[in-house]
Length: 275
Image 1 (cartoon, rainbow, N blue to C red):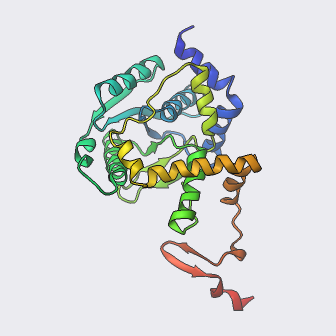
Image 2: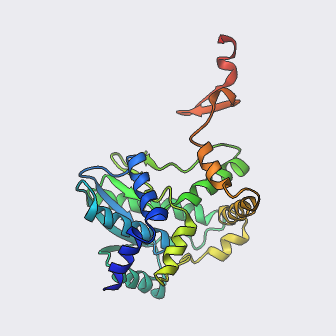
Image 3: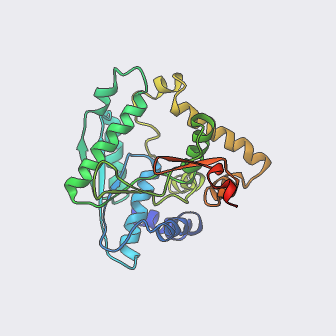
């Protein structure tokens, strides 16, 4: 059996509970992929985005409704080695990729303050523009369950705001485009297990500025801090990550001081005397 077929089988069989069922539950619960969608699947070269691509391929083959998918890689200025590794992995996994170039790394190389923020913003712009060029209505990203939890804690501890990474979003700058996260319920430990079980090697981080960013104590290092915090909390309560996630779907508005909706601030005092 060819390697890619073994890998596909592992998603459906060996990791059915941990990956496939969670992927399908997110698709269904959050209505992420629907009939006749045209989806641009973004592949960065890491384990998450390549697993996302394989899951969407499997859904195309075994799903109950038709949709189109384009597997796209934006090259922000990868080294030749990293670029070739991505191409080799796409071939190994039997993913028909399209790669296009951008100059993002060259642009942010001399930025001293928040290069990661600028890089992410530019990436998003390039990807949305490419999706429009392809005639897509949705962009799929490989963010997973752990990303959601970490983002929530980052917002609380460093942004003084309770908010999270949503399973889907309408683009505010590119009309008609929607961003979706089909791995929303899949845990990172299971993605790592799938990768190791199939003896796969992906890019860990292809950014030229990772070391620089981590020494600036910015969002990159803060996310690592959240990973370590959750890891330590799980030693006391193994269900802590699930409880954080569930709390985001179980907010009691009778017991919060205030909230913001559509950029308007609301206080519990607004309705306090009406009871």
